[in-house]
Image (cartoon, rainbow, N blue to C red; front, top):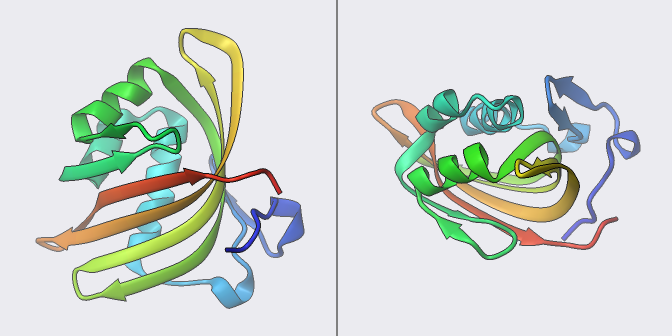
Length: 152
């Protein structure tokens, strides 16, 4: 597993809203699920949870780096009531796409605050595996697994 890279370590980095991409040129991919992953991060960082819901499969299993396991309704409620994501810095490690499934592995740092106490700031480093499924031509997040890793 590659160490988490900060945006200053890898060029070129691109930024779209609150998504900081640090994919090195040899790691760039054009799979449509990657655009959905970028959109997921942007919507989460902007607090646009109604739109985020459209990117989540009804059969979603979402495993936080703390071990908390949630379904679609649970994870949307979690981000609405517990955690406000400010931005996510991420680096794509690998994308595998087969027909109607795509797996994306990435390292990320999530910057967030607790909604109950906005002064509590969190910077969580993790290795993430996502599984995207295309149904009727639309890609949706089917599985999210995050594992905490030490800061680089």
